[in-house]
Length: 346
Image (cartoon, rainbow, N blue to C red; front, side, top):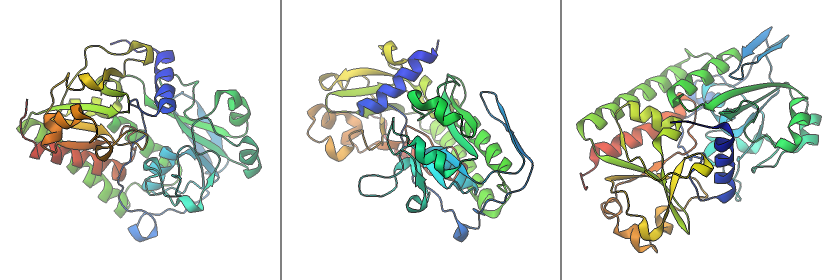
């Protein structure tokens, strides 16, 4: 399948702006972190520091940086590995002040937040804060930095070193991306052999093994999907680094046959009248706050009529995966449990 950077970027921006299409914001339950967990979270400034990202660009400083500013999801992953990220940009808190799914276990009340929504970034506050390194993701195109507004990109990137890791190149998978985040965390001072990191890796490996075993023992059909008021979206498993990984582990995803190429072929737009186009034993439902959840879908007759809905065979899909072992383990285990316990319906 061919992937095009411009379409991929447009697709993800459209997903976030539209609020209902498949996209990238998950809501992972997370494993513990901080001092109580045994993971060190106080960065030590040592030097010199060097890291080569996925652009690829090598950043060098005289000492290991501590004034880090990261996209919220990356900050959460680094925090899970034991690295304090004191400032963030991206979806960090909900309207009531609670952490978003992307924030993981971050102590959001203690963070400097330079932008909480897509397109928002307070450049003046960022400059005044004095960042050493800016950390974020990119999708397909290394020149398009995730959650960095294009109109202020030059001003932002000119103020500090920039480290960008690939969250999607059309082929990389969630496990590979987590490994790169581990390398970054280690460069910043994380002890990957600490008790907590060891326990997180063991939990992750156990979840991966459980998903592999479940998919082999009970080869049910899984539809990754998202719900909006006007449209039911059937996702293309080839376009998600998590779903590519799960496919490698044996999960049998539905592949839609009428993908929307204008937005990068991420999904097929279905009217609610046609929500039953793809029979499935399990619905892997987008858990983002901007996507409709089961309680809000009861007013849709075609939703209620889906066999998986009637049997309660619905599992939350973290559509923007978290890239640390502790944060990823629970969502992978949840899918494994859902497949293990699912009845064959179609």
